Length: 384
Ligand SMILES: NC(=O)c1ccc[n+]([C@@H]2O[C@H](COP(=O)([O-])OP(=O)(O)OC[C@H]3O[C@@H](n4cnc5c(N)ncnc54)[C@H](O)[C@@H]3O)[C@@H](O)[C@H]2O)c1
Ligand SMILES: [Zn+2]
Image (cartoon, helix red, strand yellow):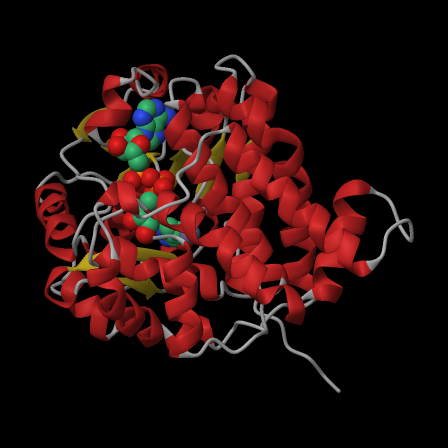
């Protein structure tokens, strides 16, 4: 039987030591004015100073947009894009986490045309690339720099909605661990768990295929080996580089496969209760993997073989135990939240969560084990 695989990826990726210095190569006297998309948290940490200095040395005019809130609504994204539209900039550089990169990607396809971000919610493919983009992630989490996706909150629906359009794939990406140096440990940990969730969900997804599996397994190996030192040690630049590669690979896996019930059940936590994306996925990850265990024995075994390099030393059950314990150890060590209590969410919220979670059918359909409303209720109850 012929299979068809969906492959989409940015064409230029610079990674590792001195990657930031490649800004000069990318810009190469092609542009006049660069719009820098970032946010206050990233800018105040000081990490944008050096890349901006390189841009200045390339004789570019620079305009900086740093007013973007975390996990913006479609209207908040539009506000920044409206400002940017007046700038006359012919190049976009995003320095930030998924929130910043997603808005920069939307800006690149909405800056000269009449349609808005809200229009793209209904007809995502109407957007065409108008300004080239360079994305420089400052969290090793979402993998937005590798995907054609942009996620915004739609406030009246209490939902986060993904806009998918291949025109939003960045023209260049820089993965440089120095950009993660000032990232607070708690944010590094929860965003790293988001990348872990992407990789393991894609590997165990109904949409998994040989191409997405390559990226997902490589991401998992890198994350298991690097997440703890990358989060705990400010100067562990090599481990941070590896986490950035892992997040990119996991993003590539999402494009070729798809996430499953972890992301499906975490969406209402972001949309309705505004829990940050990384934290909500980190909270849902273990309960959903435990639920899926019975349907994913083969995949858990294959992940064990790949990340440990061992084969045939353990039974399938022991391998699944090892994976779940390893994730549990990372969660404990990095003090990642495991309960919704600290976010003020309790029994009275249960039915709304179940209802909203069950609406995310697109991702629930990817889950190897069917999730009924009763299952979703049990999974949410576990984290209350
Ligand atoms: N497009 C995609 O493929 C994709 C995939 C998954 C998630 N997302 C979306 O991405 C968003 C989440 O992105 P995120 O998890 O990267 O977090 P984020 O971009 O919201 O950033 C979280 C916080 O960390 C701060 N921060 C980021 N980098 C920093 C640094 N190096 N130093 C100091 N502070 C720093 C920011 O200022 C912010 O306050 C959500 O909206 C989510 O839905 C997109
Ligand atoms: Zn995610």
